[in-house]
Image 1 (cartoon, one colour):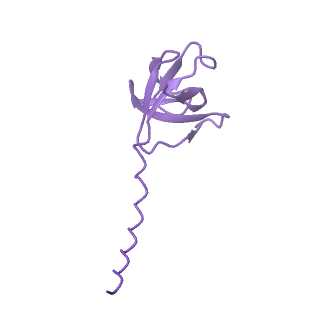
Image 2 (cartoon, one colour; image 1 turned 180 degrees about the vertical axis):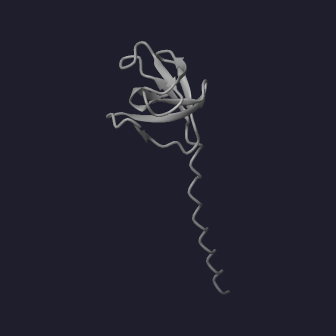
Length: 97
């Protein structure tokens, strides 16, 4: 009897889609023990919109990018959507635990 045809190799499984990028960040208490000020723009001279306590959690805007300080200071900002919409200094954040 003829040998059965070899089964076709299974198609490689598609790589798992990356999970949703976590937009949660936490204020690092060692570098910002008093928390962070949320500002209307990427500048420490712009209007204050609110504050985030040390260890407080924020939500970054989707597709967030670091924004250079508008006054040319050596600081990057990142835009957040909550708990208050605005900008906070990016160097004081860690991934949420």
